[in-house]
Image 1 (cartoon, one colour):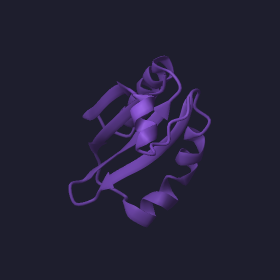
Image 2 (cartoon, rainbow, N blue to C red; image 1 turned 30 degrees about the vertical axis):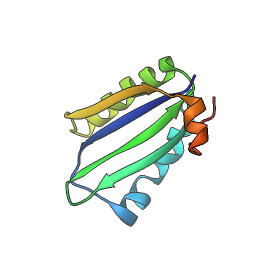
Image 3 (cartoon, helix red, strand yellow; image 1 turned 90 degrees about the horizontal axis):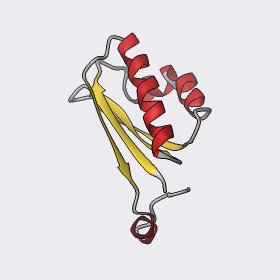
Image 4 (cartoon, one colour; image 1 turned 90 degrees about the vertical axis):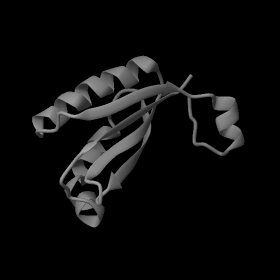
Length: 102
């Protein structure tokens, strides 16, 4: 069963193209995380928020990534982190063309 990790937090920027350039190496390194299948980067410049939606192979790999990522964000001075982990109902998600790989 696959698991979704949702993370968001307050951030002053960068956003948009500047974020894409500034966080390119970070994005590439996330591909190497154990059990991570994909990530969708989220941002709301107007609200000063950023985050992501991730798909992990197992709850254990989602939990481990969240722990590591929270420490990394704390190192950037970001302490108010919202996160949730959900199991994926793969049968219904496939009907709606969700990219579920497990």
